[in-house]
Length: 100
Image (cartoon, rainbow, N blue to C red; front, side, top):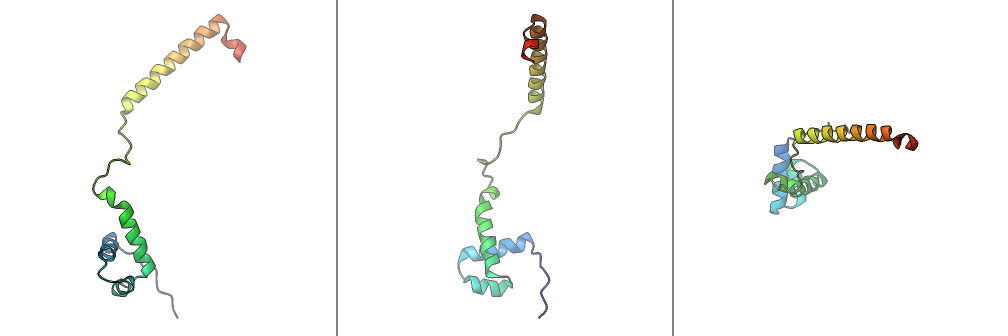
């Protein structure tokens, strides 16, 4: 018996099958026969749809806040200048060379 080639299903097809499984009108076996996919695959697509459904409606609780890079770079520059100034002041006072 020859093996069937691996099939790649479109996201639209996956969504259609997952929504049909969520409706509950037909059993997994009936859906698997209708769409010619394995019942385990339907279960996987259904769980993926349930997990990612919040992203569709713009649930922003998981998103990181926007960061202004210019202010961060300015802060880094300021801290670098302060560190350099303090290093030179401590070296002149003879306190930094004792720590190295």
